[in-house]
Length: 259
Image (cartoon, rainbow, N blue to C red; front, side, top):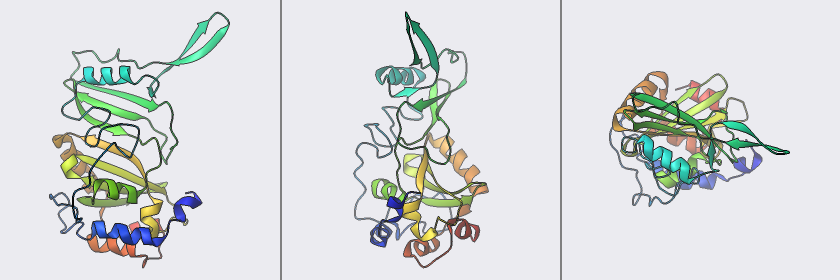
């Protein structure tokens, strides 16, 4: 993590903590709760990328609503923003690579489909160098997995979306992972930081970056949430605020391992 992320003062943590005082009021992971702030955040264009619509919308698409034809039209109207295949083009003495969004495998007879794609231009690589993806069922978007095209910190997410309904955490082989659940938006955010002694849990708001933003239908949200509940650890409101307070000197790996 670059030094500019670590240089943010703990005053930022204190101000963000106001947003999460009421976070996770009980041990049930998925109840409907409102962020404990004066009013709901006024969502404008997404903070995660260049989409001009706010969650649960992404580039005009919404899980459970938009069709495969809507997706095709979106890609067609944003040429140069995404790619999923390079082809070599030869023109006289000039040879160059051209990007192509290939929908040919997705015939209307298929009940389930998936398309993966990449940003043509991004300032964020993250811990996982993996593509974006959109899954379909009966030609309707079932879920979208979108990687931000710029670094977005945990405190930016809470300022933008409000407090998550639930927070879960887990240590991976190479990373420490935190999940923010937003039930009203049918969204789950994966935030990561490499598992090293350089990551301090007291700096969670300034250290953890959004690795993926995942948009779901109501049904797929429930399915994914249930799966994550079995494979991650619950972070209580008391524990979260203790992390934010700076009282815990543990590394991210140690702190999550103690849950």
